[in-house]
Length: 183
Image 1 (cartoon, one colour):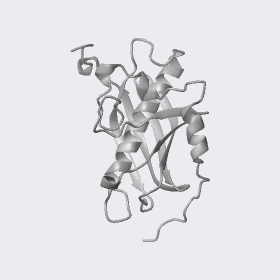
Image 2 (cartoon, rainbow, N blue to C red):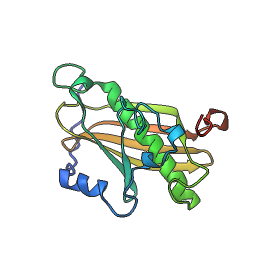
Image 3 (cartoon, rainbow, N blue to C red):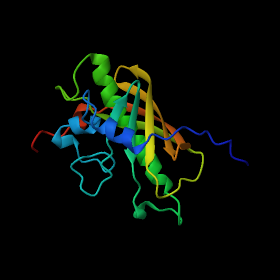
Image 4 (cartoon, rainbow, N blue to C red):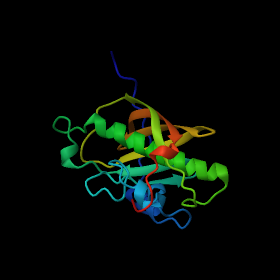
């Protein structure tokens, strides 16, 4: 089976990454608005010191995050472990779902009650081996907002080449899963 031709997307320069991190509107990442009791996820929890601490932001109608794989995210020498890509798509998708729910409700990020989403379905297609040593750009696009469900499509690119794509079906966290503040 041959691979489809590489779809090259011009990589975002490191200067643009800094711009995204410092933009005046919505400068904080979606995940920075999660209440402390909901900030422990391995992929995106800001309070998980051993986690990935993914940071997603709006870039127009798309959401974007940048992640630099570390040497221990290896599959085989020179290539990133595929499970990392799935985690990035998953957490970027649920973060985008939360931000989309706030937009849909016309509420500012972080307003109460908190919108927090969990994964109902995760689908990932690996298109190319992902090289180590380059930042990965994760982009999401909201496909559907319907009640407590948000569907987000996502891509992961390395050096401007899409290496994986996926879809996250995220559902608003059920009340019984919500931890008590401070508990």
